Image (cartoon, rainbow, N blue to C red):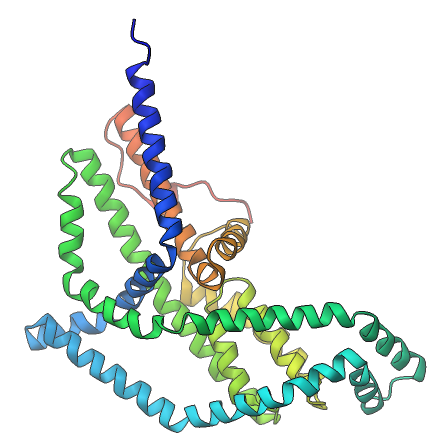
Length: 362
């Protein structure tokens, strides 16, 4: 009798290889994220490249033209808008230490209370609360600074991602066919083709939808805050549009940042700003987002929240950005695998359909 069962040895070997693969991906996660963002960028410009390719008859020429047009568009934007954003950011950075001192000393409560007619006991209560929580507020400010530095540290991705995306745009079909050639059985090939098709559809739609939502937020934030003359309106609108890419928590952080800057700069109409932020969040989440995003990202809120928290623990800001598409990709693989397993057990089934999944009751 063999000391080690052959089946158990195969299971252990598979588990070990899987663990080694996870370990490798974790160690090389920053490089992996650069490639993932390059894939997202390739999905973003793919329709334009494919459309232009029909006219140029050359994919390389089409990619070159699209990149030149994007570079011209970005250069135009930063030429006209960039200096103003940079100027506002510089002014806010210079004023930030004084603002933080106003909060930690409680003087901000006195300023706001006098402007809005608070009673003297209310002002003293608010001032005492800020003074007693001075250390906590400083820790929060320090944490925010660390996260901003973390984002700046990954700015190299802005150069690397478009370069890597060129290879995915040019040879993406070849990469997919090479992966499919490793599978020889018909059921496994159907499973792989199904996963690839669903991922292509989901990722392409997700990236374009996220960009659309971010542009909507930037335009609406900028127009409203310029109308009521909020200080640093353009910079805050840019931050709001940028944070729209962060799932779940990004819009909340954007609203908190805008309101905080308004309070620290003694903006008199902060209540109207607060009402606007609440209304815009409802409109964005329940009117615009469902129509733009569609049903391609059908994730339960708990799954989305878990993905955001886990992504932040694993890879910080980059992990938060990638959490939702990664969770949606896992969902697609699971549903395709379930159909594949049932085909193996019971024979061919009807064509795979998203509508066959049991969904939570609304």
